[in-house]
Image 1: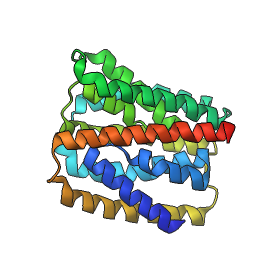
Image 2: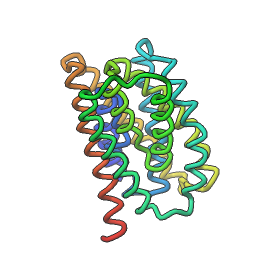
Image 3: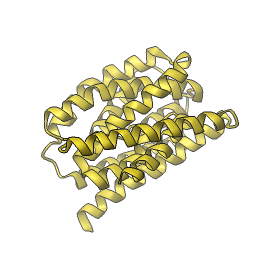
Image 4: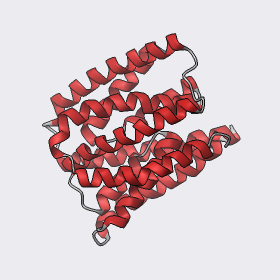
Amino acid sequence: MILAIAATTMVASGVQSIAGMGFGLVAMPLFVGVFGPAEGVLWGNIIGTVTSATLFVEKRRDVNWKIALRFIVAATPIIFLTVYATRGLNQSMMNIVVGVVMLALVTFAVFAKRLPDLRGVLPMYATGAIGGFLSAAVGQAGPVLTAYARAARWPQRSFAATLQVYFLGMNALNIPLKLSVGYGPTDATVGWLTFGAGFFGIMIGSYIARRISSKITSRQASSFAMIVATVGATLVLTRGLIGIFG
């Protein structure tokens, strides 16, 4: 299990380093499979925070602080509501609903370049709020952010940097809230081993991504983010369907 966590977080952190998002999309299926839906999403929040903090240090000069703060302001009340409102809900049904929403957003993102430019603060706040819900519910806010970036013609470099601030802000709320309602972890020894394996994987994945990132264009990174978002959304939906009908 520890080796699987280290390997998965290595790939997930590499994906996020290149695309700006994608840690939860890659790592969450393993976390949920090992720890269950509630604690698995919590682990995605915890280890994802380490990934975002590492990338923030590298990319901080490209952060658009105005957008990041608007995203966080919009997400804050939604995260509180989502954590407390979903405690007793069927997780499989939640995954189905969220997976459908995420796929719809990815589909929108694919065609976003054909639409008029998405400008103004209202879409920004709406994106931040939906991202807060997705982060609290399934630990994966990437697709909605990718959709917004496409529609707003947001440059990939600034997008990738700004998202790390947003992820850090959301997880600063998600983690203590989920711990306060009993989401886990339940075993301290397993918890520390999991964190250590995740940290090791993040360091290796980030190093590898730094080595190859200079060879990847902004268009390639943006396309890669879309692929990751599509795969992640499909996995969430599939997990929910298996839970209901499997």
